[in-house]
Length: 252
Length: 352
Image 1 (cartoon, one colour):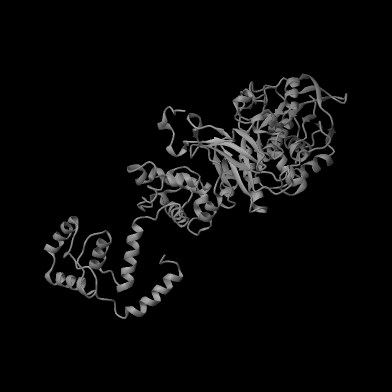
Image 2 (cartoon, one colour):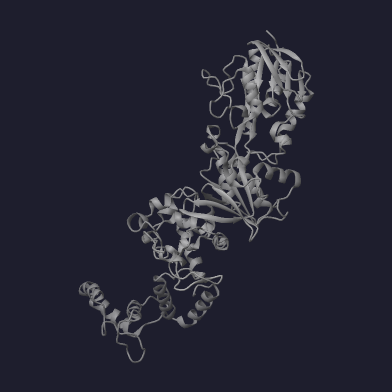
């Protein structure tokens, strides 16, 4: 049977088979089309409980859906109406996971301006609560991890390695991870800045500061980029730090 | 002018009036159609009263004791008003037991009755044993002291409160368009009691809006959510069905925040009943010629007075739930105010 106004029905709700036999009766053809209802059949309260029981998610129970947060939210106001903190709280509290997943592409877009948290008349720590919702979803495999998390990991590893933020290594190591063909030095196997393939925007970005930079500072930077100095006695400290971070689950 | 006062109704408002009149030394006749005093909270075995979370006996016990022991008050149980003649200051009243009295003033405190949820057939009350009223839940607490599903006697995993059953409903005619005033707060209290004693039971409140007015906002709306984890879902329950496959009920509604229809399984569904004027209120209004709201049939105060206990007839005072939904503490204080007004009307000289 043909569906009139197909645009009104989401494709995932249309079930249709080429051949279908029910109780020995062949119902293939036009009569085996089923449109699944939009009805919510149940709540996933375990999901909700996990959020409520986490230390930074407790205030989710205080929300009374006034939408002060959403009205203040720059992401909602200037970007996408589907980013709606108030709505995420309601969905998470009842464990309506399929509805949350529909918004997975926008859910990471919080800019952490904290207007919501500062204005909430019920004292909900909205920004924290939203992060707990995302964390719980990621943990349960219900949403892809936030893309910037990959950079965060790379950054942490780099700091753990040298005991300091090593700009050149961080930048060009990251560029290498993005698929650019960088030139590495043969001994340390680290990318040498600007020798290989470099994105155009980066060249433009660094030209201006380099022109106005003090020569000795430039030499110092170049030296660091090539020889990767470490913090004094870093090796011992690194081992302890890595162990503690592993125990606290901060390295996952 | 006659110096005595007739109080009709032995509930909170009537008891408040009779207590004050007795204390002021005014001969008072208190008529009550049931066989004991206390009104709905006592007769219907309420468990805990809003807003002070006291037991009915704690609240009304002292009133009943004082009214029964005061020599100025004659309590006439199983008695109703059957006729009234005369004029303000000397009403000649006939009671159902044949007695006639001449009274200077009358306090009407004839109260309300609970809505009969059988009139909302789509909610399945009377059809499914696990659909109960909030009055039955109160009695479950007060008489049996435990929570269970009437169908199998076991503890429910999920309880749903359905707000506004018999309130704010034009489908029932013009008689039930008012708000019951107590339902939101009582549901919050009952939900908290459930969560307190059975922390594993999930409780859901289905509301259109939550009217825990004034100072009730925190104790009966915020506390259930923040301290007891009661969940509030916006959407009026349109239908309750039963699924033989799992033996659970389904509450059909639209979650208006998500904007999707829902049919969620529940084990026990509690209907939050509205208030209607009692049969006694309608009867007394006819006998005494009191003004009634044309739609709800509740008594209405005089148009000329700012006070809501002054009726359209001089010398007749109205107090409590015969005028519309009201909570018990306000009922008591209205009764006391009406008692004092009646005392002043009969020209009592009060010395302290």
